[in-house]
Image (cartoon, rainbow, N blue to C red; front, side):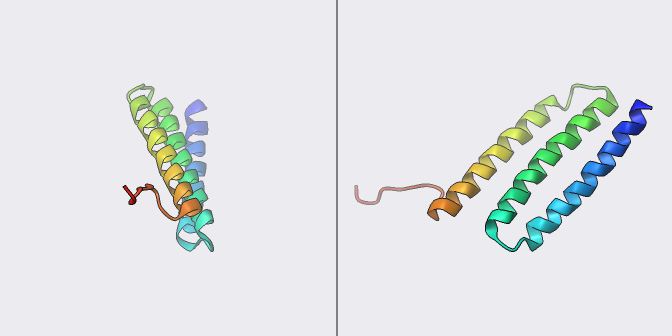
Length: 94
């Protein structure tokens, strides 16, 4: 019964990821694309966690941590780019 619920959850998360990929490609504005990319990262973390529970292993916990860090860095970089137009501020007057 529990495995059936996990498979249903995986299918639902996969459907959500398809919707997020559509929004990433079609999104009317750049902030919509950034939010879709962040949602894809969170959904990918969720899929990895459910898959880890389904396989009854803790081998994917490092992968989940790495995906969380990369998703955070990517979202932060895109947000800074949208706010300032550049990601790294270089002082050229020196």
